[in-house]
Length: 230
Image (cartoon, rainbow, N blue to C red; front, side):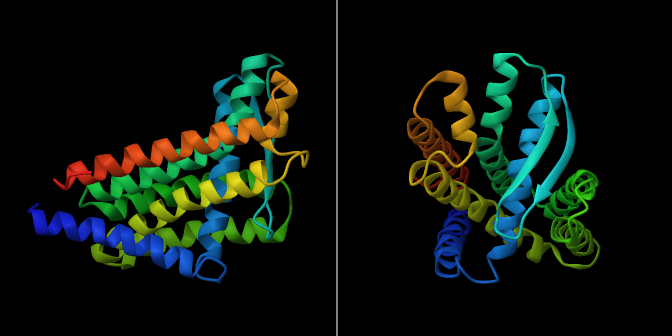
């Protein structure tokens, strides 16, 4: 890839961020926010499984909230890591989507993998019996599958980059809104605060710093990949 193409890639990311912010409270960005909620709750579930537990059900709400009900071992680290996995896990997913879309020309297979992941997630959402969550997970999975089958590589390249960078932006916004601006609302940070004795806003601040540093490192990697000084 030559330098001009690299600059174009970075320009696209910049324009995607601007577009996401301008359209933040519109129906265009709303499905992406719900997608990030899916990743957030799925991350809790995956971490619970890694520590020997299991997922019972996952709820996805129309108010951009949700929960993951799981059974976990009563150890400190099991509770700590599972509670921490939501915001940082969804950030991880966003960065992986972004970097993967930049590193491969087979973007449509990323869409296929995401479709299969959301289909798996829908099984746990079905356990709640709630229409919105079921419709959104199945709808998202079917959309990604249909895109894999019928839409051209150009769509997947642009869509996945937009999805990845917007997911990262939303995680930062969500941490600020849920954990720093408010406390005592039963958030993940409140759960960590109860475990550790630290203030939940401090925990939210640490997660915010980790999120910003992670995105900085990811963008630095992208810029270096495109041979642009950063």
